[in-house]
Image (tube, rainbow, N blue to C red):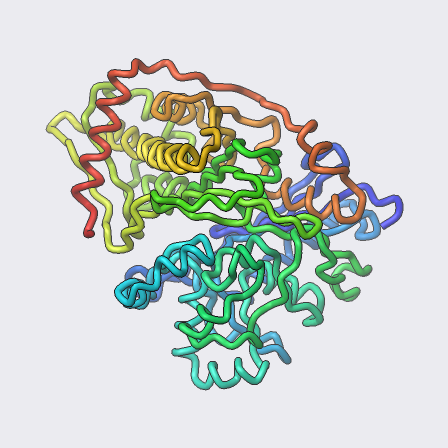
Length: 499
């Protein structure tokens, strides 16, 4: 909109929904946040109420706009979202047919094992860059079509819409006019061929998923529709969309091959830009779409850790060892530095590079002297060790492809306010760690994408020049100690793996 001063960024996450206003310098001006209820119907099942997500999104957006910024002053809306969470709804009414199945949900583990047993995983990996794991939304959609009465027949008739959370929010924002997604979210479904950039008919056939239920796939900067006037008083273009980790990659200005970021939210997700190359992992990492701009696809390697900040919640809520997340740094610093305690946080299985949905959490190495401080330290250290797992795997993959290994790690997310954690992280991975001046990188990335589409921001090169390092952390641990500690971690992981 002419003369508009802000981009409204919607950051729909696993534990909360947020809305932020960004100005033309890329600085966050205001934020509204609403916690999101977690639903656990069975062991390993995780759900959200899709209507609650929509209500929270509308509430935080209206809260921002009622705080002194009129909707006329919003140039565009950007959306970033928890990626693999799956919604199925009626096209005509917008009524969800089931709770949203969250990315953490493991109910389709048996289906994945069956498909692996049929030798389908290699085909899936070559086409989609992904592995057969319950994490992704394709098997969740298949489960919904199998378990919601008449869903498969209705989907084939075009009566139903499948979407990740971005699709669901755009549908609601546009009053049901748009059933769309972007290439990054599509690339996380198990159903999208990242080479052809289209839904894959062979894989759709395996799952019995009709094309009629799928959204149209657009670039990350695109015309996704305009909001219904009744929502905010004016129509606002939805102009930028990316899944949360790809949005953080944009927010961290990782536009060149070899640049890498790691986001520490509920889980931890490391993304390495590989440029126009689809690097096929031999270390069980994911090949994915980093972003698609102007019809040109940039690829990435990604490693996914299911538990990062969620471990801090466990320490607080279930164990009562800390009162808030910031206590973890204080306690970790007080712990015996020679403690052999290792915590493997496989509460919902292990992600990359292990991909074992049946592994379960365990604490090893406790003695009579072990106290709360040692357990908290082991919990924080487990995030560093898991990051090392990912970086070693990525380094091996890119070396095999003739590309340069990442030399520095850019970090963001709630955990990076913890200086003890970042020093431990740089010590364990043996590489510098950089914390940016603006750590709201996920929401910022969505804002950048929307802003580039409407001319509010310049090119990716202009955005890269805006990026600033607030603090750099350098390794201080002796190599011998690093080897001992990481070896202890690898032994512990080996004891919880089920395959």
